[in-house]
Image 1 (cartoon, rainbow, N blue to C red):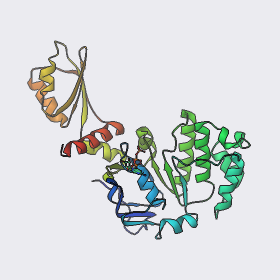
Image 2 (spheres, protein in one colour):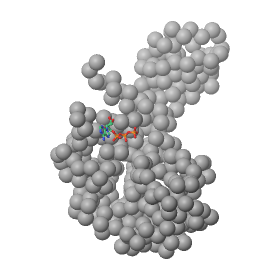
Image 3 (tube, rainbow, N blue to C red):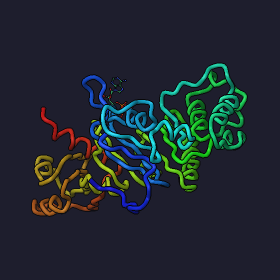
Image 4 (cartoon, rainbow, N blue to C red):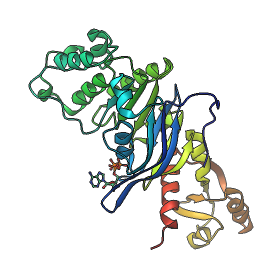
Length: 310
Ligand SMILES: Nc1ncnc2c1ncn2[C@@H]1O[C@H](COP(=O)(O)OP(=O)(O)OP(=O)(O)O)[C@@H](O)[C@H]1O
């Protein structure tokens, strides 16, 4: 497993040590150990049911581990949250009915030991024009921006976001990440769970891949892509395309033929291309490229599933 290098002397913001959480027979988090450090923007990825939300709930003290330890700023989650060190935006958090956006933001500010000015909180989340609207009258994307405002109502050291941009349109999403980048540039740690892998690729300087409650990979997006190992090979053939012969090339994991254009994936591109020439074929416009984060993520999690006994 790759790990991001951090100075050994830096005190972690958050730590999981051998943490396990089960729901009945489901092991949602399974012996998880990890550290988060100041100033990191960390994406938490994983297929549905991988344990992302449970991990965030454990970090925030909303759920308790069956075994292992969760620490935040050297204390337990509860103490750190009471001290205002953590801002959180959760997926399912219902918003209070009957109050306006400004009133709800005012409440979050009142609860924070170091609140930002209300106008700043509202503006940052793009809520100024709808500050007087009742929160139960908002669209899904607007409600999501209110949750974001609540998470950033005060000066916290760690911001935790569960699927923060779900329901936001493209421009709201871009504005959201620009704001989060500012938060990280000011030295805050940002941890977010997402299903949008392109967001993780563009925004995170560290990616954690969870699978069945375990940490499958931990590194930069580039490291995770390299770790997946699979390469995409694309070329055109002048003559007839013998799909069976192409499929039988060494290390080929998938094949897609469209006219005379061949796209395949290989776990060892050098060996595949060598064997391709060995067939007496003359591929034109040959390109060998790495996978995107999304494809790397799928390759990693599928490889892990394949290891499981049937
Ligand atoms: N309250 C609960 N009771 C029983 N099982 C639960 C409960 N909460 C989660 N689980 C199960 O624990 C596992 C991990 O769930 P979790 O919500 O943490 O995953 P996730 O990675 O956030 O999933 P998603 O991407 O679908 O939101 C899943 O198998 C889920 O069905």
